Image (cartoon, rainbow, N blue to C red; front, side):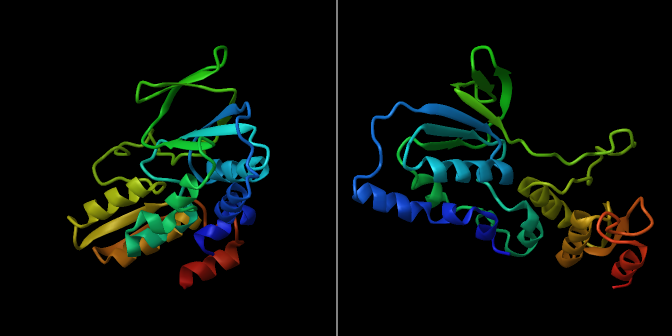
Length: 235
């Protein structure tokens, strides 16, 4: 599945639709608009933005400011493993940079490398790690999940321990593995991401062996029964 197939199909053609509306003078101007602040520029955040832009393009009732903690625009986390081959984060973008800039002026702005550090619901504003205050009419939290480290386990924060969640995680793993040629890698977790991570580590060719550690009796225990899980291991 391509990255664009994860998007709203109508959102993919929004730039062309907006350009046509601008040429025909169909875009509303000087309308009083509410500001929506979206915290999180991941797959959920951009899906919300796509839906809202699609329905709002003719009415122009909202301006969107999206604040993302990572250094990148929304990308396909499901396709993270492919990053080990092409090493180009742009190949994982759910929408190209041009998609964001093609929206009507002022309707969509984004801030990258920025955390929301506090929310003031009484005054309707958020504070960011950049020291800025962003007021809002509507606040949407689309922060997603995070990789959980077993902090009760000694060594969870040791050098060479990584999670498998973001582009930055993968870049750190790739850089570290380049200094450990011939070593043994280990993946904790035999779910979909765990299997993908193990395969990606094998493809790096820096590790002499990659071991998979799973707490259940077979891999993919949430998707498969014991017999099917055993077949996956054999393969």
